Length: 230
Image (cartoon, rainbow, N blue to C red):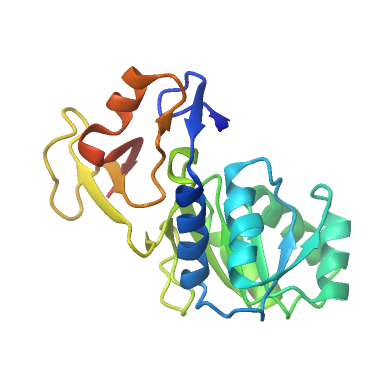
């Protein structure tokens, strides 16, 4: 049960099943190519948040990955951990990449072990992503999710085909629609902006002891994210 502002800003308790969490762990591990036992993750995101819980705690287990754990994000400590422990995967938020870019401009470091950087939690500036990719040689992509979806629904491709400034493509077994924001019922043509709807095995059971909010958030089995996309 995760506390969240939900799609409306009012505090709610998201109820995730074991199936939700396991499904999202397997979805993200398959996205990474399923390189079982080969990856090493720099773990600086808190595990009590859905992002860290799913991508590193559960997702790391699904990949058989080694976690290079940090008690909190500190630029100096994080860079030292990369140099000394040679992680291959770095799940981050944009502010972390900004801080690292600022430090690396003044003091370069060997971060060549990192293959993939997946940023989430806030929009990632293409300029920030490009600069960090220049320091590491890594694929730097953006993902999207929300606690109601365990949380990951979209990630940029890791094969070099990522489009900067986008949230990427739906994860395996994840369906998405873009509908008109007024009624939430009419599917929009490609290129038009509307509300993003999600359906998949990672979508929550509902809000704890709140059937009204649950029915409003997942009518017809589609999670209404409250976010606009095109």
